[in-house]
Image (cartoon, rainbow, N blue to C red; front, side, top):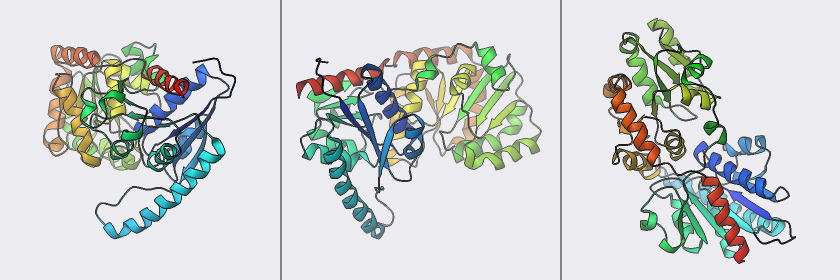
Length: 373
């Protein structure tokens, strides 16, 4: 960047789920690393996860009263429109007070009104799209964006081709810096250091279908010698899952509501069972983890199935649909984890798809835009 003395001001907007928040924080951290005196302001949606995670990471955040459209109950959308109108007014005020050099949108409710308003005022905008199927907000903002950073090939079907840059999705730094051996990691997770290990993660909130499939398959897991399961159930499902496990008497399953040391959990695993959110997939690619993906059916435009298929088509993951999970998931994961040739192939192919240094690349693009202006 040119050696201007003016203090750099960066606005980052979006959130709603960990999948939007982790990339946003990675970008902000990289920006702060390069420009320690830069002012960075987040704008999120009131009552969503970012309002707690962003301050915990040391950044200021303002919440907008914005929410998603209710596709099932159309009459409830009057409230949504009123909130949207209020959010646009607030967005104008935020921009007037903060005067950012660039506005970065990572998707999620708040980025819509915030970046739309920035574009109206001639403030340069950069979008980051995590999924292989573009989100509604980013599609609406794309025509006036200066740059769109993506994680998958073929995104010109959603965005103007001349503004797309393939950067990958930023992931949590600490995941890549784990120094433990698989044996040490298994021990740290309270598991047997010498058994083949399956890690089950349903996202930060847990996944009902995956949990139910595991509950139904506990007997089968218990009878499979030399294999163990580390099972993150999510806080919501902690009690029923814990009770089912205790009642089953199965000893080769370690269950917990939430895993805070994901670096250790990934390192411990020979095979991962996961939802197909963009963040999780980027982590699995960078770490080269063999994975069975169970896409969540409850997401906009079924984008998790599209994310999963991008890997399945390259022999870089296996997929079990949400509907098939109760009948197929447990038998598939138990037969896959002991097939070393299969897990090695999946691991190799998924790692080939990894795009490294995504946060650095995105900040490079942001700096270019600021310099041009």
